[in-house]
Length: 283
Ligand SMILES: NC(=O)c1ccc[n+]([C@@H]2O[C@H](COP(=O)([O-])OP(=O)(O)OC[C@H]3O[C@@H](n4cnc5c(N)ncnc54)[C@H](OP(=O)(O)O)[C@@H]3O)[C@@H](O)[C@H]2O)c1
Image 1 (cartoon, helix red, strand yellow):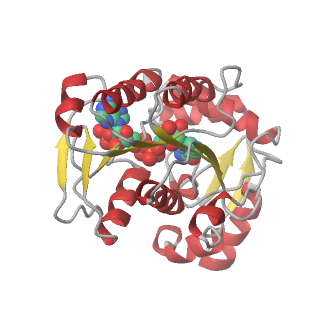
Image 2 (image 1 turned 90 degrees about the vertical axis):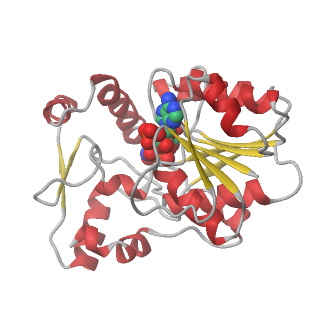
């Protein structure tokens, strides 16, 4: 039985759909069950909180492998370490955790430093572990903080930044493959899409496929902060996104890898595929 922690999130929902289509038995865990585009079939939903140890023990009992993802935030490492501790206590054999590129105690972003704490805890836990470090999700292109605005403009401080965007569905497929396969991994997987692209190039591709004019407008960090504050994004997260923008502008995150292909035996989805498949979002 697989325990999916963070099942209501971007990757978690996709993973549940993939596991369901593979007829794998799983238990989906999150604070509350999402209502839409989520198919857990005959599997069970369990509500709880990563900061509530007992709720985790009750929900995870009987599971032998765990998928773990948690939303970005100050308490993320604490929450993830709680999940790993419960997995240890219950004799879980395998845990697949989502992390970030270049996670490190001396990383330039807070999330790199926080993820390094839960990565290290996992690596020393005695569990069979896999760590997924994905590049930016293609889903961000239509999200609240790194997507286009009502004028179909990407207004972001990202001149020259290069992204190896990955479809979160491919992350879910890699997680499903690792969690259902036999044998130890104990490996870090750097997951990327197949191309390095600037936001300007992405806007051109969307324009070409959708027939609607999309564009990229470079702005300053301060202008970006003002826009995000007006939409109600909290300052912790704005600062964190700005740290990542700097990483991408400095070309520290951009390399394309073959890790998706090595696990799945096929190339990762490219941006054209993603836009075509989700055309209604870009129309
Ligand atoms: N977005 C990117 O481009 C990108 C790139 C690389 C790495 N990452 C990493 O990917 C991870 C995020 O994955 P995602 O986008 O799938 O996450 P997400 O959409 O933010 O979902 C996170 C999941 O964790 C659950 N969760 C959060 N706090 C919880 C708590 N206290 N108790 C129980 N459940 C809790 C959420 O439940 P609720 O529904 O109740 O909130 C949700 O199910 C982060 O570690 C991030 O650093 C993201």
